Structures are given as C-alpha cells and as structure tokens.
Picture 1 (cartoon, rainbow, N blue to C red):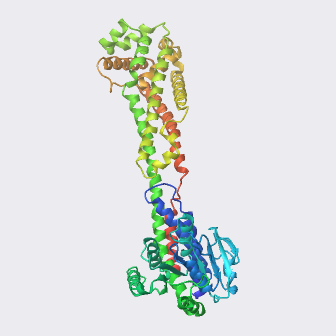
Picture 2 (cartoon, one colour):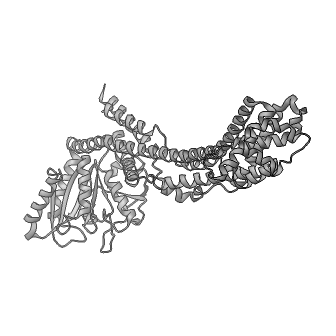
Picture 3 (tube, rainbow, N blue to C red):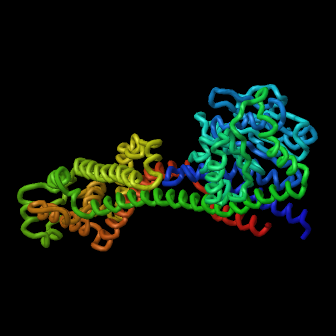
Length: 567
C-alpha cells in the first residue's frame, strides 16, 4: 500500500470515528456524566480542529499557538516576533479576548476556509475587533516565513469562561504550543494541568519564560527545567526573556532573536517541520483509542442507567398488578359495604342462620327458597364496583409513588423526576378510567353469564335470580377467599362465598362455575394490566426522551480499532 493510500485510509477511519463520537449521547445526569460530556466535546474539537485537517493536508503550514496565563506577555511576544503590532496588548485583564492568526501572504489559502478551526468565523486585516471569541482574525505578514503561522490565543486562566474555552480549543488545534509564562507565575497550577495534558497527548511544546530578573535567571530556569522533566517534557526547548523595557511596544531583538530564529528554521526546514507535525499528530492519534474507550464506557453507563430506570418502573407496576391479584383472592373485598349488600341480597334472619348452621344443605333449599322471587342485585353490584375500583386505584397510586421513589435512588433518576414531577402521581382522570374499567368488566361478566346460561334461561333457578343476579354472584365469587379476614368476618364472608358458589353450582354445575370464575378473574386482571401499562408508559416516555443508541458504545470501540488498524 502506498503512503498516499494509507493516509487516505487513515483519514477515512478518523472521520468515521468522528461520526461515532458525535453520535454518542449522554443525556442522563449519572455520576461522571459531566466530565464525559466535556471529554466528548474536547475530543470532537480536536478531531475537527486538528487531527482531520492535518491528515487531510500534511503539507499545510505548521501552526504554532501562543498560549499562557493572563498577563504573561503573549501578545507582546507575537508582535515582537512579527516586528509590528498585530495583536493588541494592554494593562486591562483579560487583554486578548479573541484569537489572532498571523501567516505569510502565500499561505493565506490554508486559513481563509474552514480547514482548521471550522467553528470560528474569519476576519481579515491587522485592524479589527478583538472582542469576538467566535471569530479568528487573519493577518498576513511578510515577517513570517512561508510554512509557519502564529496564533495568539486568549488567556488559559481568563476570568471569562468563553475565553478559557477558546484558549483550550485553540491549543488542541496546534502543531506546536508556545507556552508563555513568567518568572513569577511559571509554577501556577492551571497551566501545568494543560502542560500535563499536552505531554499525555504527545503535543509538541516549547516554553517561553518571560520577564525573568537577570539575577534570578539561573535559579528560575533550573527549577522550571526540573518541573518539565517531571511531566515528561524534559526535551521541550526553553527560551528566556529577561525583564526589560519595551521599545515601541516590542521586545528588544536581543531578547527575541533566538526564538525567532528557531521558528524560522522550523518553517524553512521541511524535515524539521515535518518532525514537529508528526510528533503532535502521532500523539493525538495515540490518544484517540483511550478517549473513545472512555466515551464508549460513558455511553454504556447511560444505557445501563436507562434500562435500570425502565426496569424499576416496570417492577413497581408489576408489583401493583400482583397486589390487585392478591386483593381479588384474599377476601378483603368481602368486607363492609359488600357484606351488607350481600346480606340484603340473600335475606337475613332465618336464612342466614341456616347458612351459619351448615352450608351442606343449601343445594336442597336453594330452589325452594328462591322459587318465584326475583331478587334485586343493583346495590350489591354497585358495592362490588366501588370496592374493586378502590382496589385498583390504590395500587395504581402506590405504583406511581413506588416508581418515583425508586428513580430518586437510581443514577439519572432524580434529574428526570425534576423534569417530570407529574410521574409521582397517577394520570389526571385515572380514577374515572378505573371506574369505567370496572363497569366494562361487569358488563363482560354479564355477557359471560348470558352466554353460559344459553338454553337454561327458562329454568326456575335462572328465573329466580335473573341474569343480573347470577352475574353479581359470579363477581362475588371472583373475589372470594378468607385470607386476610379475622373473627366473625371469616365466618360471614366465607359463608357468603360458599353460598354464592353453591347457588351458582345449582344453576350451572360445579365445573362450569369454576371456569366462569376463572374467566372473570383473568378478564379483570387483563384489563387492569392494560390500564397499568398505560400508566407505566409515562415513565417509558420520559426515558424515550433521553434514549441512547444501544449500539453506540460498540460503534465507538469498533471505530477506534479501525483507526489503529489504518495506522
């Protein structure tokens, strides 16, 4: 494979990685998400501002970014190298508020387009505004040799956040970072954080130690050299500028000549320039795998968090459905109003005393007792409806509260609940929806009884109770059990359930009654499950708004491997 073909393949692989990085979403505020978003943004900027442009044009001029702390003399240094004022300096802080890029006139084509720093607008001419961090001002100067451009960046420790962000962006776009510091501030923490980052990424760095008192030169330079060595930058060239008076706003030639000569030699020596570019580009490429891996891990963490939140909401509503199922079988609905209406339905006094004495004789007495009587069932049906609706509403409200409570303890959940506080309560109007559900279920039970009755409608037993009465007894049987009741309630409720069963068996037979009761129970549970699924869907919808592509992490890892293979 030719070098050109390999370069093209590598460029394509890096562009694919860039697409995967941009597509990664980190919407949830899980632990570490803020740092991961910052790293993603930084990686995108370096790919856009440096790696891709440099791979696409390996013969483009070397871009040296002049960066450093507030008041270090960056603009004065750039002006002195060029020989006239191209970047404003002053006593007010921050001084440099926007970026100024100086280039040889022959190299203009490399910078007027969007090859580098595509996110910044372009201004031209030595005179122009310095207060727009969204633009870079281009200045052509014969003082710089072809093949070299200087970019004066804002302060890395500026009090203005936009300036700090721009400074970091520009430094990530550099082939060479000219770090300017002073004898008084060379040990500051902020620039050393950036120097460590530059060292880790293999960025070529040169140091300009400015404003050094002559008597402290040896001591300060020696200490700085030891600090550089500790950070893996021991081979970085160091240029010193003694504290001296400016001449027409510029540094004397005696102080700037060595640095200017070094920069000119880089520009004029294609091999030396290529070495600096290759070192920085190689370092940037070397860092892509780990940085993409961290982003992939952060993306996977987002997916896991979303699935955890989704599962917790599903569990809350599954528990609610299980609670309804238990409430339908533990006899709790046979208390209070339902019991009272049931007693009215079957009568009181002697008949109930016969029930309490023993239900074994009921079958023989049922027909004789009810022959010729049409027993009203409306009150008992309404009581059952009210009780069932209360059971469903209670568990629905409990599910919403439980799901919200679980989200508050899970990664990403608290912030989602802040955006969707309504999730902690049931949907407005859900009580009415439950009442409709129970009424519809009762209608379904009535149709079930009609279907089962068939040709038996003319029997005395069907006529005695009526289809409605039989349906109400079937509903009562659907909720029959004695678990959860105590004392006299057990005997009365148990006897009531047995009575309802015996009465229905007298009409349909024992096997048919069991099947009818099972169908009625399954129908109510199915309707409840559908209602709860609709309530739970609010939580799913909140998660859908922060959906993460489950394949994003794998694509990032695959794209990073492709870059390594292409190299």
